[in-house]
Length: 356
Ligand SMILES: CC(=O)N[C@H]1[C@@H](OP(=O)(O)OP(=O)(O)OC[C@H]2O[C@@H](n3ccc(=O)[nH]c3=O)[C@H](O)[C@@H]2O)O[C@H](CO)[C@@H](O)[C@@H]1O
Image 1 (cartoon, rainbow, N blue to C red):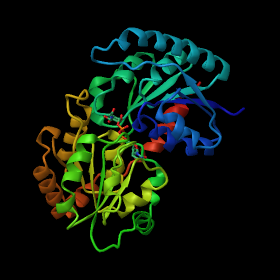
Image 2: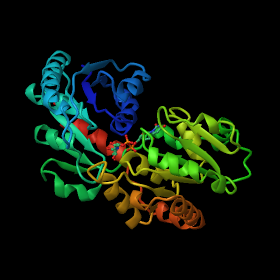
Image 3: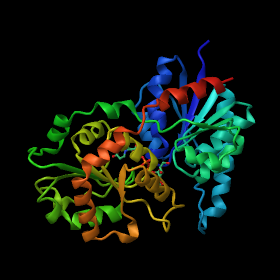
C-alpha cells in the first residue's frame, strides 16, 4: 500500500520552500502527499502551483511576542485549527507529518500528536522560532540546519541535517536571466532581495544609491509584493521584480554578487550557488534576532560580509558592496570549502525512519 505524508508550514516563503524541495523526491519514492496550510498564506499560492498535492486549509492565529488586541482572539483561532487539523489527519491517516514551521504548523503538529501520528519538524534558523518551540514537545524528530541549534533542542529528538536547497535553483541559465532583465552584459550584475516579503529599508536605501551604483553594476531588485517603484521602470540597467518563481534560478545564475536579508533559506541557497553575499539581517527591534545569528555564523565562516541595519546608510551600503565585489574571489573560495553533504537525502531518510 502507498504511504501518505502530510506536509505543513507557511506564513512566509521561508516556511514553505523545504516542502517544495521535498515534494518531487517524495513523489519519486511513491508517497501520496497532502498539504495543510492556512486559508490566506503564501503557502496556498506556492503549493497551488504544484500538481498532485491536495491543499487543505485550517484556521490559525499569529503568535505575537508583543501586545495586540488580536492576542485575545487568536488562541481561539488556534484551538479551532487544532480541531480542524485533528479531523483532517484522522481522515487522511498519514504515516507521518512533516513540518517546516510557521504559525500554521502548530495546530497541524498538535493534530498529529492527538492522532498518535509521528511527526518531523525542520528548523531553518540557528535558534528555534516561536511556532517550532511550541510544537517541539509534540514532535518525534527535529531536524536542524545549523549544528549549533542542538543546544536548544531535546537531545533525543535532534538530528543535524543541514540546509535543504531546492534542486531547480542549481539549474539556472545566466543567458536566460540576461534576457529577462534586458541587460547588455557589459557590467557585473548585483542582485538585491529582502527575503520573501521584501524589505522597505533595503529597497529605500538601494534606490537612493542607484545613480552611484549603476555606473558600475547592472542591478536586479526583487523588492516584495506591492513595492515596485514605477517611476524607475525605464531606468537603464535596473530591473525590478515583486516576487519571482520560475525566473529565480536564472536571475541568480546571472548575479555576480547579492545583497540580501539573512533568512536561513535564502543564505544557504546563496552558499550552494557560491554567490558572494552582503547580508543585512532583520534587526532585533523587528524580530527575535534569528537573522543576526544566521548572518554572524556566515560571516565567521568567511561566506558573507555583514552590514547591521542600524549601520545602514547610503554610504555604508555602497562601501560594503564595493568591498564585497573586490573580495568576491576570496568569498567564493571559502564557499567552495563548505563541504558536500546531501541534506535532502538525510531529511528523506529521517522521514522514512519516523513514519509508522
Ligand atoms: C520576516 C521573517 O519572518 N523572516 C523569516 C522568514 O524569512 P523568509 O520567508 O524571507 O525566508 P528565507 O529568506 O529563509 O527564504 C525565502 C525563500 O523565498 C524564496 N524567494 C524569495 C523571493 C522571491 O522572489 N522568490 C523566491 O522564491 C527564496 O529563494 C527562499 O527560498 O523565514 C526564515 C526561515 O525560517 C527566517 O530566517 C526569517 O527570519
